[in-house]
Length: 369
Image 1 (cartoon, helix red, strand yellow):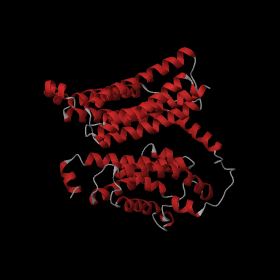
Image 2 (tube, rainbow, N blue to C red):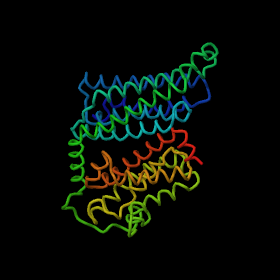
Image 3 (tube, helix red, strand yellow):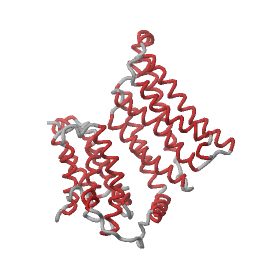
Image 4 (spheres, helix red, strand yellow):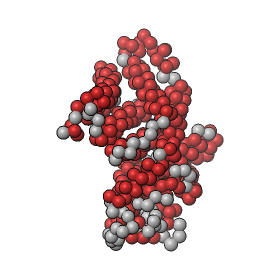
């Protein structure tokens, strides 16, 4: 079977090795941490070898084109998230990279699977190379720092090479390039993205001739964010307020809870918004679950302070209303994906602005009071 071809088996091996790498890297045992470097290198080698094998012996398949970039991002994202957990790099930059890479990788993989490959720019290739260089750099010197026999001899050199300012600056540059190349993907490949989306709409019977059914009560409750979408005025603002209420539940701000909530509600929200759009027309005001997701994204990895939340609320509402690129593009799309994504973009804009403002001392002092 082509699905279980040798290159695809290597791709699955890379995915399987990822959690093994994490367990070893996060271990308190220095020997296991050293082995994590070998595991990461082995996983990276499978990336090169499965591609060579597919081209050399004619094993190139749509499944391979779909899975290979996905496995790559699983590996690199896992490494960056581990670095964030260990306090080596700042979490907000890691999440920007991870979310951007997840969106673009899924988009590219789906396009490859549909036989409509998306062009990768030279800058995007440089970005990928730079990410790998930094990942290897940090992994090697983190392990060296936590290996007593090495740290004892080269402690001064290791501390210099892992200097916070240097690592932070390198991450800022890579994050900026990653974010820009993500935006460029949409600019350069918008026609292809549009064609893919329209074809998926036909497959899901979301075209104008589709049978219109009344959404269930559960769908209405979910899509309208507990009926906030039925507010007689400013339903989007009401939906954003619902998101804030959930956010101030103790512990909700933790990465695992808010991160999982964003992903789960986003996926289910696409289906719910699709159903509501078929009944009420394009991007109906009753649908505010997209505002909930966007609001949570704007608060992601920010300090849980009342003034920060208020600033994020107004920043998100501003970007949701003005719809900077590519939010307007998504807003013009039919279907739940477009409904959800334009608020995701607004949330990302709001979050980045707040993260930058918190770098300014007097604004940080004001917001964190």
